Each structure stands twice: as C-alpha cells, then as structure tokens.
Image 1 (cartoon, rainbow, N blue to C red):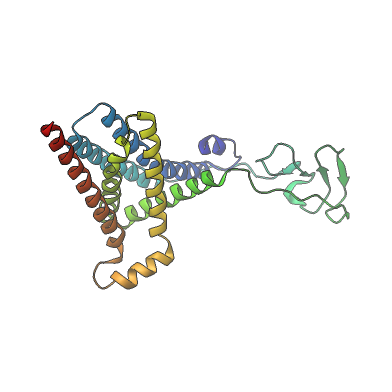
Image 2 (image 1 turned 90 degrees about the horizontal axis):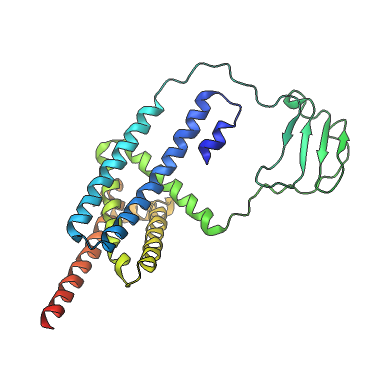
Length: 275
C-alpha cells in the first residue's frame, strides 16, 4: 500500500526509494511473525516431527531475516538518481485530509508561492466560496486530521513498526547483536507451537496462535520501552550487558515453554502406552 502511495507522489526518485525501503522494513517484521505462525500451524496440521519442524523454521527464519536486512542495508547505500524533480505545490494546490472523501478542502489558487493569497474553500454540501486572502474572516469547520482506524489495528501497526525498527537497529550495531536479538525472538516465537495444537479444530488453533503472537509483539514493545529499559538496566546492569537483557528474557521464556511442551508430550505418550 505504501509503495502504491509513493508512486503517486510528485517527488524525486530518491524520496520514493526511501519510502519503499521504509515499507520493506515494516514488512520484514510482519512477514517474520506471519511466516513462523503459518509454518507452525501447517506443521501441526500435517503432523510433522515437532523437533525437526521447529529447527527448520528457526533456521530458515534467521536466514531470511538476515538476508533481507542485509539487502535493505545495501540498498539504502545506493546513490540517489540525479533528477531535478517536480516542485510540490503549484497553482491550484488542494489542502485536505485524504483519509476522508467528504471533508473541508482549501484550494490555493497561487500555490505555495502565496500561501496566504487567494483561495477557494470547499465545504461538504455547500457551494464553493472564494476568498481574496487567508484573513477574509470566514470561519471554517474543524478539519478532522485523524482516521477512523480501530485502536487494535492502530496498536498492531505501531508495535510492528517498533519491532522492525529494533531489528534494523541491532543490524546496524553488528551481525552478532543482530543474530542474538533475532535468534532469541525467533526461538521464543517457535516455542508457542503448543498454542496451535490446543484443540482439535485447526481454525481455532490458528486464532489462538494469532493471539499468542500478538502478545509476544506487545511484550517486545513493552520490554523495549525507555522506562522498562531503565529498570532492567538498573537491576541487571552489573550482571548482564544492556543489549543482552531482552534476548536473555526471550531465551529463558522460550526454554521454559519448550520444556513444558516436551513434558506434556512425554506424559501423553506414557498415558497412551498404559492404555
């Protein structure tokens, strides 16, 4: 969606490239969570060997995440194309909120050259009004510069972007910090395979897996918040480096969940042998 939006902007090619790279970084985090979720769900429905399925998913996810981040890092260093560009804001510039169809709009007849000059105001269900200047004494209704997106979707987009920013930040710090962070996150995500086989209905298991992965995404945002970083640094700063605190938490939680899954599997096998 952002790529299609960037194509319509009358800006220089380097700006479009920057928008595409930003969209690809956002897509990396979303693709990582989605691919692991659907891979675990598929492996569970096909009843593949759990250990080999988890190892394969972890290995492929790390390779994909590293390769994609490496490509984005190299793509970001490509010299921008030389172009004079198209000036933004010629005569007839329309100021409006593109998120709504029926809304108040202001048309600057002289464009950005005279931002307080003559203009035409368009109000829904009313005729057009011409003003010689911005100080014409005409009261405009409030312009809603907000959208109607539900909060759960907005929070999801925010958490995905924050996670993508954290992935790119660790990649900029070096390969080792990147592999430690992404490896621990992927290990934690793969440990939730038990949530995808709780019931006998595959669709219900998929929705449970979505809720579990959404919880991990929110938990990652919570741990990376400045307040929690300060608390963790003050408590564990003398024991564990700050960059290793969150990977250590992910790894410990993943080990606990994997251990629980193994114990449940052994207990079920023992019950089956008894019967």
